[in-house]
Length: 249
Ligand SMILES: [Zn+2]
Image 1: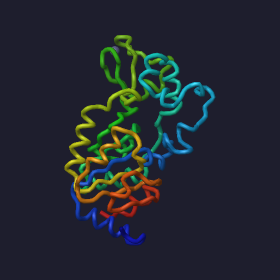
Image 2: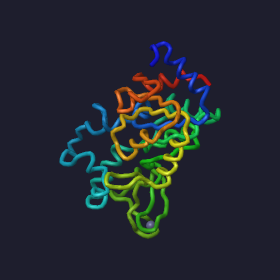
Image 3: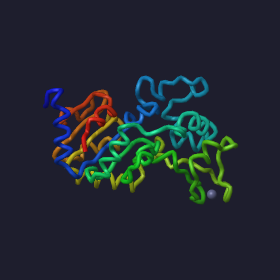
């Protein structure tokens, strides 16, 4: 382990040495942009909204809720998950720069806000999908985010076939999208450096990716301790955007 002041020097030394870096990120990457962390004290799960008090947040974002009570699902979804007008922060932009510089192989994200792409990143595997994409349950036609967020009816329906339009988001009770998952496993296995950022590593199966890494350097950047801290070459419990800002390319 390194002394505090040397940690950033060590971080830059590792970034200089490695050209197949993979970033695996969670909610903490987006909190600096004003998106609530689902599990933190001030996050979505602790916003006691009277209207939804009869249901757990896990239920409100589950496939069961979408199928059995779509009116409740969409009301909650529209109130809580609209990212219109939300901008990427320094961490998103630094990762996009690292990709352009040929350092970063890919970003694996548990976030569903599309902020990495907004910051300019191209190689992004969204293991929980994205609120920016929607599709008709019946005919498969694709629709943009506004189709749900600005829908005039409680439940958005496909104008072509009448099927229900739903977000391409992995809900509780659903499997992860296969392509994004396979891409993530491939990246992690080929990485020389894995940076785990803004995730407490409690949500499986995505969190199991952290254990598949067998490359040279594991770096953890998360406000709270994680289950991989003890295995890491470097651990930062500081704000992830502040840590990223000190990476020199
Ligand atoms: Zn349709």
